[in-house]
Image (cartoon, rainbow, N blue to C red; front, side, top):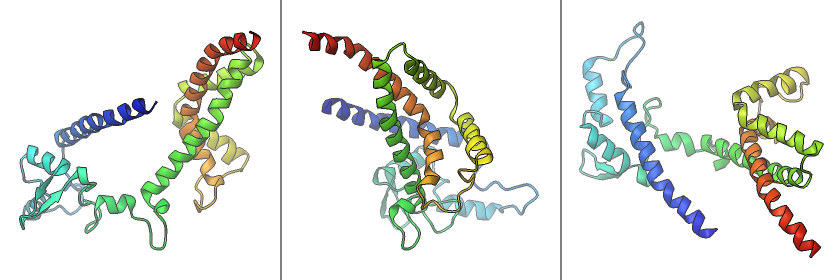
Length: 234
């Protein structure tokens, strides 16, 4: 098991490298640029665009921009600035004077990491994953032990629903039922400090994982059940 986990973690390195490379070159191939404005709005003059391109390194060749983004590059003072491998996501185009990592990972004043933008996403992911495992594994085991019963048919229906129906469709359905009809939750919560406001987003995000977990557990438990029964009878 440990060898499998290590192998999967090592495979993340080339996958992240390939995905980031494809994303980088696709963004450069797309028409337009970061300084494009609404034609009806005030435009950025050519001199300002040139200075902005120089400041953000967009005037360099594409291969050097990529190396600076992934590994790093020297600044105007000759000091090496590490890139993505050091967690440096670069400056923000939208919020001047701030870096992308500050926007994502820095929480508000007097708040913990969990109140940052990434912290909110991480909390939601952990809650949905926990829900998928805590519910999906028992449902799969019970379904395997009560094969071809009403419990098995209901669980199979839920599993098929969770795998085949997109998350946004499930989200709309749950909002209509629990927010619009039953008034049990708010469509737009006023605060995320209460646990109940996380339930509906966690269900939507983790429903597909729950269904797949229940399905795989049912198959594994179903194949192991005859051997366990024979061992117990012997």
